[in-house]
Image 1 (cartoon, rainbow, N blue to C red):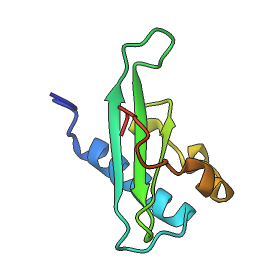
Image 2: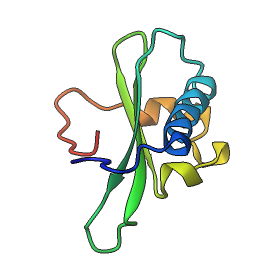
Image 3: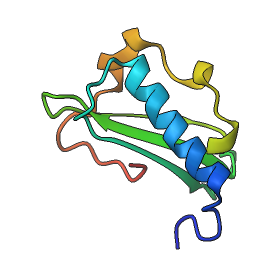
Image 4: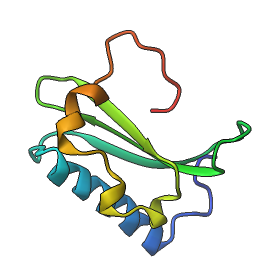
Amino acid sequence: MLGAGRRSAAHCQALDRVGEWTRERFGLPAESAILVAEVSCATPGCPPLETVVAFWTLDATRHHFKVFKPVEAVVADDLPYSWLLHSLAVDPGFGCDCC
């Protein structure tokens, strides 16, 4: 089960905090969906826990990025710069198992 046993109040607050930072960083309105998740990675060279963020802009374009640390360790400066918004867009049909 994804995230089993990691639903402490601090963990939930960290998820919310990263979502709000994402909303602020990219100027997303309240109706834009944002998904923040902490996932484990077993691939050699990959950090054991990483934070994945996916969000949709009003034109229904999906964007995503990863921060290679647990969600509780993420700080606002870990998020991509706002001017990178277009480079975070996911082309329709792009196969991605991260988010």
